[in-house]
Length: 110
Image (cartoon, rainbow, N blue to C red):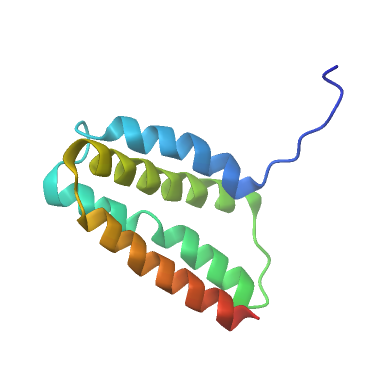
């Protein structure tokens, strides 16, 4: 019954617990403008790691992917909490900017 292996991406291994950490940290660690700044900056290491391994001839490491994924997930979770509990529309603006950057970066990697 439990003999099937499940392969989980290293970054996803960090993202999902990170979402829970970010969501639960709302109101405890980050308040006001600090929370928006955290939502804007926490994804940066993950993007840098992806960009370095995509655009350069560098090998990525799973531990780095997991840690940067946890930071990315924390930004997601905190942003979700800000959206749900504080109706912070600035979070949508931050998400839109990241979406544009991600889309442009993916186009450049082709």
